[in-house]
Image (cartoon, rainbow, N blue to C red; front, side):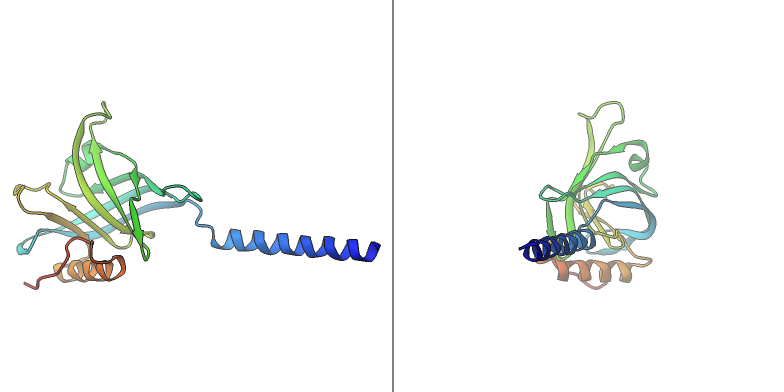
Length: 179
């Protein structure tokens, strides 16, 4: 009788250790992010509008169990002063496909959380190595302005292509045109 109780107790302890180990191994704990990535900005289908820039991301990607994931921090883009002068609201992950996250990148005046400065769509992977921002921030409000991680226009198009293949057909831009 004692032998059976001992075997059951040991079995439960081993099972608990296995479950705990698997949880700790696979659970995506919050991830600190602090990086500067080379990027290019350009208007939709207009390679002559290319400008080299950098994207500075600093904050924490929070990934709680059974809750919406969000990035709490700042996204600064060299050459776009409003990204430095204004605060960034938390970016909630609205959709995630194959490791690519989609959220809204919203800037607001530091003194008033109710006054939005601008809004854009923001795709990023969990490591923030690949970033695609789509907005109407530039001088030409009728065309989409893309800010994409990469050292050149060709790298930016390649980044977009890889992200589109992972994310799916609703990724913007939907198709890449060569210069």
